[in-house]
Amino acid sequence: MRICVHKTTGKIIEAQSHATEGTLLANAIAAGLNGANYEERVVTHEEYLSLVNAQINWIEFKTKEIKAEAQRRILTKLPGATPENYRDKELNYLARHAELNAIVLGAYRDAIGTLQPARALTASEVTEIAAISAFWDWVKANRKASNEVEADLQASTDKANFNVVGSARWPA
Image 1 (cartoon, rainbow, N blue to C red):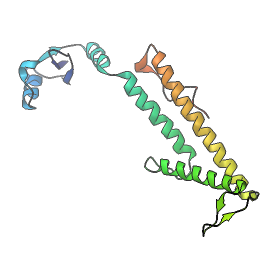
Image 2: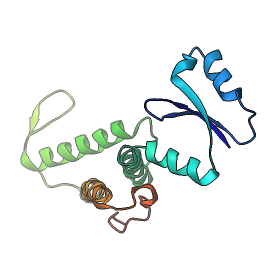
Image 3: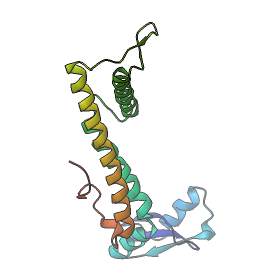
Image 4: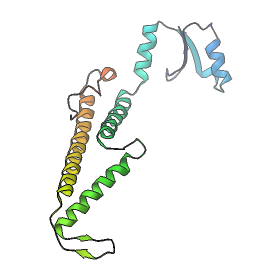
């Protein structure tokens, strides 16, 4: 296997399993790089994997994976949510929760802006606020778990193989 690396940093810019000598350096020059700053090396597959692994910022990479997993979990619990609209859906849920609380507190305005007196919630409103509260409690637990999984990643001695999705910290 041949690799082309920056002479100073050792950063791999290209690798090919069956390249002929000079091919990778020619590719670097063709891409506009200064050929004097690069060199080709022949390495084993294991050496290549070791070099690649050393160049990856596993904490940054896995932290992004953790955040994506937290979002994915929220999407599964929030009806009608997509990656594009889930923040709006969360805000709508929270706004409705605030609205239901305002009814109970007597701080609710009707459609024409008149402040209405406090009243008990209807049965359907009680069901609605309970569902929103349960969802929001779960979101907070999910976010707490995300922070804990990030702390576990920091403490891990094998960041490359750290299992984000399989962490026991995620809420059900």
